Image (cartoon, rainbow, N blue to C red):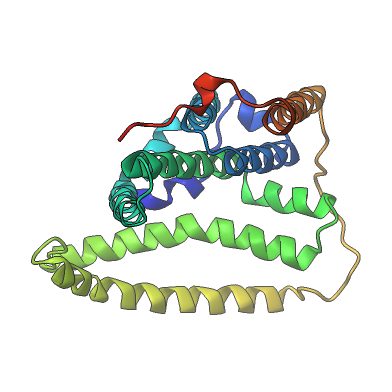
Length: 259
């Protein structure tokens, strides 16, 4: 399912992939803060173009756009609902406000997609552990990120199997289409429960949690390029805060979509 492509790690030889996972986590968090801090559509659009550039450097922009395509219905729904609500509240430029919300959502999706598309779940867990996050929590979170693409593959196999038996997912009105997904959800839930029991039995057979002191084969180390990226992002964040709260944005940055 293309909806979960943004969580499917693919090993590639790119500058972004070679960065330390902690660097990419720091970058994702700061970009998320920037996205929430600004409400001007031009600033959000600049952030979006910067994120697309990073995805292009990581050679992962195709996977992200496939996820975006799968979410297009939800994005259109948000535009319609926001426009109606803002119109009812007599907000100036309701459609422009809705489109600004869409750009912000795209920024949030992109900044975390960069992280999940370029960081292996094992490296993610190791990064959290070296950040002094408890091992149980780090392991659980890494397992969850690893499980999302697996769940999507299982769901796609169930969809193919049911369609080969004559199930038509797009037939009928919206209520009928939702009901058509019941033969997919039930096997998917059963498969997920069985997989969870299998993972639990595997952990118990390996005496998971029997010792608090753990050793690791590979330890992550920050390279010069990681510190350079951290410095650039930190300076950019500091400049943005200074510009937004102490100096003020230029007039061109405060332009609103007149819709």
